[in-house]
Length: 124
Image 1 (spheres, helix red, strand yellow):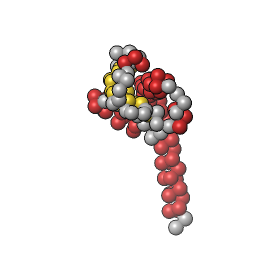
Image 2 (image 1 turned 120 degrees about the horizontal axis):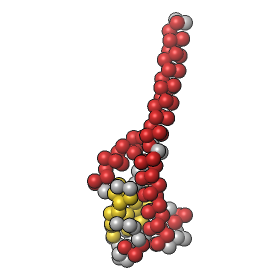
Image 3 (image 1 turned 45 degrees about the horizontal axis):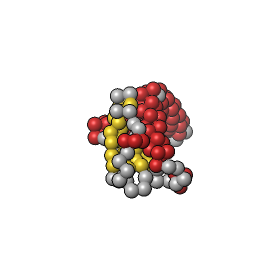
Image 4 (image 1 turned 90 degrees about the horizontal axis):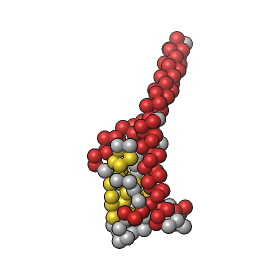
């Protein structure tokens, strides 16, 4: 189902599941803001995504921020849709590359640490 603001039931609480590129996500509305979350069937994907990057809260955002105060409900809803697409695109298109970069950085750090320990031992 393609997300549309007209889907939103005007009286909170409200929640609906959508799908983008084969990955499901939820948009919920409480009394004052919208929340992007992953449904139970996407939990394993979210766990993988969050392991790849500690900076990512995969499919978890909300509009409970000062910068959202002046936005309309429609703008807030569309912002959650945009964040869902950004997260899913990142996971499907960039997560493996980012994981490889982290592995290379970890291996380099490991080698430097190993060399420092060897140097320290040789001086004892």
